[in-house]
Length: 186
Image 1 (cartoon, helix red, strand yellow):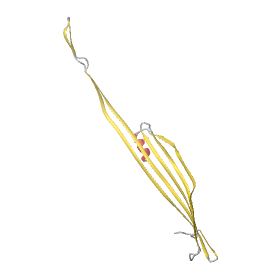
Image 2: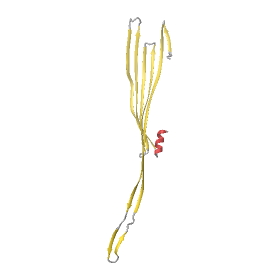
Image 3: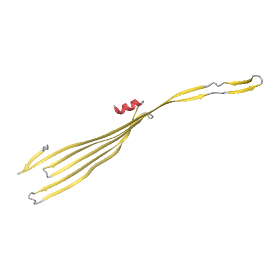
Image 4: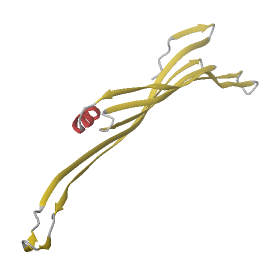
C-alpha cells in the first residue's frame, strides 16, 4: 500500500508525494565435476636364452631359459571442476508527485563468475566480470479536466552511469580430489 511521505494542500487542491522502492534478485549457478580413474598393470615377461649348442669337448648341450616376470601396477586419477554463475540485483526507486509527475531510478547490477579447478594444477581459480547500469526516466501528466487541456511528456530512459569490468583472477590451492570437491561444496 502506498503511504505518502509528504501531504499538503494548496487551497482546495491536495498534493501527495509517494516513494516506492523495490528490488529484484536473480541468481543462476551450475557446476560440473568429473573424476576419472585408471587402474591396471604392465607386465614384462623376459623368457631369456633358450638354445642348443655343440662343441667337441662337451658335445650337445642345452641352455635352458631363466624367465623373469615383472608386473607393475598402474594407477592414475584426474578430477576437474567447472562452475558458472550469474547474480544480479535490480533495485528501483520511484517518486510520484500527486499523479502529476513520476520519476523512476533503476540500478541494474550483475556479477558473472567462472570457477575452474583440477588436481593437476592443485588449485581452484575464479574469474569473472561485473556490469552496473543506472537508468532514470520521468513522466509528466497534467490535465485541466473536462478535456480542456492535457499535457503528457516523457523524459528518458536516460543512462546516468554505466560501468563494466573484469574481476581479478583469484586462486586457492588444494591438495587432493576430496579437497577440490570440499572447497566448492562446503
